[in-house]
Image 1 (spheres, one colour):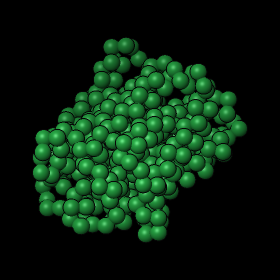
Image 2 (cartoon, helix red, strand yellow; image 1 turned 90 degrees about the vertical axis):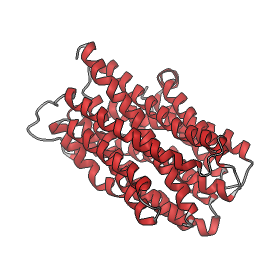
Image 3 (tube, one colour; image 1 turned 90 degrees about the horizontal axis):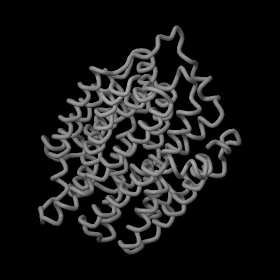
Image 4 (cartoon, helix red, strand yellow; image 1 turned 180 degrees about the vertical axis):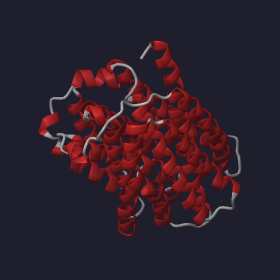
Length: 388
C-alpha cells in the first residue's frame, strides 16, 4: 500500500482508538461511582463489570470470520453506534441497576466490535514494518485515551463540582458522536481482504504453538486492567481516598501503560518478547497481590504506576506475538479469538472476585487478579521462549 493511502487510513484508525477509549472508560468510571451513590453493593459493581464482557464472548469469533471474509468497515461503524448508545443511556435516564446493565452491555459489544475490526484492518495495512508501527501506534493512542478520563475526573474534583464523575457522561456522549464520524471515514477507505474459498479451521489456529497461552495470559492482564478502572473507586471509597486523588492514581496507571507501549519496540528488541512478557507477568502478579493489604494512598499510587508499566508490556507482547504466530490467512480470526478469551476473562474474573469479597474484603479482588496472573508465568511455552 502506498504511503499516502496508508496515512489516509492510519490517521482515522489511530484517532478511533483514542476516542473509543475515552467513550468507554469515561462511562464505566462514571457508572462505578453512580452505582455506589445509589447504594449498590461491591458485589453489584463486580456484576456490572462482568456484564461488559458477557455478550462479546459469543460474538467475537463471528466478528473475526466476518472481517476476514468481508472487510472491517461495517463492523467498525456498528461498534461506534453501540458505544454511543452505551454512553448516552446513563446520561439520559435516571440511575438504576437496569440502566447500568444495559449501558455496560452496549459498551462491551461496541468496544469489542471496534477493537476486533480495527486490528483486523491494521493486519491488512502495507508491509511488515508498517503493520508493526501501526499496532504499536494504535495501542499508544488507546493508552492516551485511557489517560483522559481520569484527568477529567481529577479536574472536575479540583473545580469543586458537586458530583465530579457526572462530568464524564456528557464528555463520553460527545466523543461517541465523533467516534461515529471517524467510523464513517474508515469505512470509506477500508481495504477488502483477499477472497478465500475456505476459512482456516479453528483447530489449525488453536494448535499453533503458543497461541492459547498468549491468549489466556494476555487476557488475564487485560481483565485486571479493566477491573482496576472499574473497581478502584469502590476500594478508594472504603479506604477514604478522595475522588480527586483516585483520578491521579488512575491517570498514573494509564500513563505508565502508555510509556510501556511507546518504548515497547526498543525494550522487546533488547530483552526478547517472550522474556519481557514473563517478567512483566511476575511483576504484575506481585503488585496486585500486595493491594490486598491496606496501604497509604501515596504508596498505592506508586505501585499502580509500576503495575501499569508491567501490564502495558505484557499486553503489547501478547498482541505482537499473536500477530507474528497467527496463520497468514486468518489474522483477523486469530486476533478475534484472542479477544474472545479477553472477554471471557473479563466476564469470569469479576464473578470469581465477587465470591471472595465477603471473606477477604474489597482488597481480595486485587489479590485474585495477582494470583491468576502469577500462575500463568511458569507455563511459558517452549516454542516461543526464544521469540524476539
